[in-house]
Amino acid sequence: MAKTPEQKLMELEQKVRLLEKQKKQLKHQIERAGKKAIIFDVMIDIVEKEYNIPIRKKLLTRTVKQYKEHYQESITAAYRLFGYSRQVFYRAIKAEKTKQQCARKVVSLVQEKRMTKPRLGTRKLYHLLQPELQALDVGRDKLFLILKANHMLIQPKKSYHITTNSYHRFRKHKNLIADLPINRPEQLWMADITYVGTRENPMSMGLVTMLSLRK
Image (tube, rainbow, N blue to C red):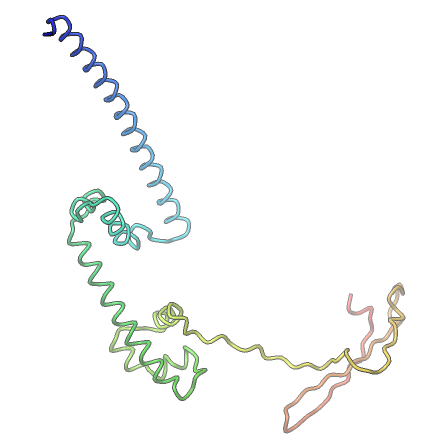
């Protein structure tokens, strides 16, 4: 049965109302997305200013890579969102490859030196490898960063001497002055002995002082 002109008109009006409703919803979503993007920009500006971290410069290439993989977007379109051309992406990729090659050469030089001296520190390495590092345009700070990124920094050993051993088999006397009030000079004297000097020239030093002077 054919539809009357009135029925066709009603169907068209329903479709128009549905499209208008969808248009409002999309407009609202676009406005929310725009506000959200503005808030994220403000957050990035705050972090860059307060912590002095160039987030946009350092993370732009990786961000575009992930965006391209997840949303199947072209590099040109992705970079236009940030106001850049795709040449910026290729320059960043080339610079990253150059940096990695430089880091690999530095690591190889350091490993060669540490074959004979495994605990050779970064500052000594910088002086020993200065001609090679200058050819690679690597300064002291950059050398530290490369070794840190490759977990090759040498942790300094703690240097201290144990002069007291309380875990012995002899009798230990109680602390007789634990509750004694100290209220005048020369009321209580303390004495101690410690070891100074070297293994070749050992010496000991005795100290006597008033407890009241330590307060």
